[in-house]
Length: 512
Ligand code: ADP
Image 1 (cartoon, rainbow, N blue to C red):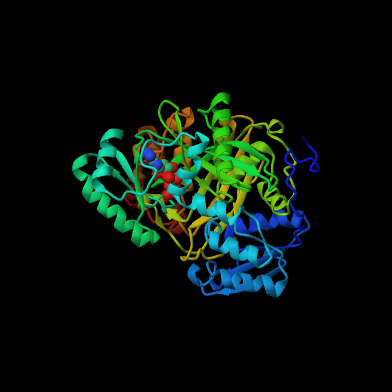
Image 2: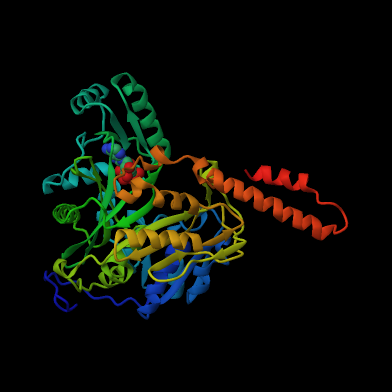
């Protein structure tokens, strides 16, 4: 099927052309969404906090309105202010991006009630998938593989303990409302159970305002592999293959790639069909991601569904040739998908690294400051999605991601080599970034071989590995060069005085 006029399902969905889109977000994702909107002839509205007054997304938009002070709670998270801007400027659709209000079912409902299109799924789907427990319940009838564990909130410690023994330690206690890698506790043995459970519940209450927790088997050598899906309001659903997101730090993704080095065509089909089952379980439409955890034997289990555009969506765009934001907008307008599953193929390989303003040599502490030099890499197969420019300050109020660097190649090797070249061409001074750390990971034999799991960073990374590594021969050569350099400098400064070779030698020693 190639024509937009031929939906497979026949539900009649009223068409609602979008003419003015407000992007309720900031930084790289706001810009990325607005670029597609502009290509589609849709006018764009930016919203911003006082800290983002000079941001590129504000300048790019056709119109812009300030929401308030820097903290998100006073700006990007205030739905009422965003809706007031829509009313003032005659906006007919809101794209929430990721984070902020993107998975807030109440906000999606308010948007709908105001007669504005929400570029995302229905509030009901957001609500079901926003709770890990409700999501598990919803997919039970669809035969989706789940990690062995409880599918209801734990109310009785003794019952939970019995279940944990059945599953076998180690187990993981998870907060149903958890997200962003937070709200999880590993329990190694029964003796720790009570203490970890009490902590997990009080953390879940303080962080998410919901004390519901459940237990799962802790998969000791897991991979995180997710499936991108798209569904229209007529009920058509397709999967756009997988993204491998196992390179993580503290359960947060750092490097993503598509396709995965371990997924065979048969496994891809099985995972894709399972993802579609998850989507059907909540009558999903829009772009969504179904996350799976994969064990050493390549068994996969449903983890959760993210009901929005993901940070790592560009790798899927690179290998499928589809613009996911364009598809999201079409779906929100009530159009049916313009392609079927059989029309999709994987073209080459794509890798993405997240460039953070963090210091990998100092426990990845945020390194906020001014981008004194900022020059993006260029060349074939390179895409940079960012929201900063040279001279800008990185604000402390938000996620410290500066950019996403994406490389596409004909093969996995080509994509990785291209990425390393692009990292070397990226010039950022004024702050520390995670670029060197990403280079380290991409060059590591375990990453190169494709044989790694979510413990990659824990297993292989040490900050000292980012220091330049020289062989003895190179050290001698460097020392000799340093001596010569400083002698020449000294001669130039004081042509009549004897060479101050000891000074130069001291410098040379410091280099070794
Ligand atoms: P969040 O909503 O916080 O992102 P997820 O359920 O998606 O939580 O899990 C985040 C990460 O935690 C996964 O990518 C994986 O690395 C790890 N994880 C989650 N569940 C398990 C499990 N049962 N066993 C081992 N690791 C897990």
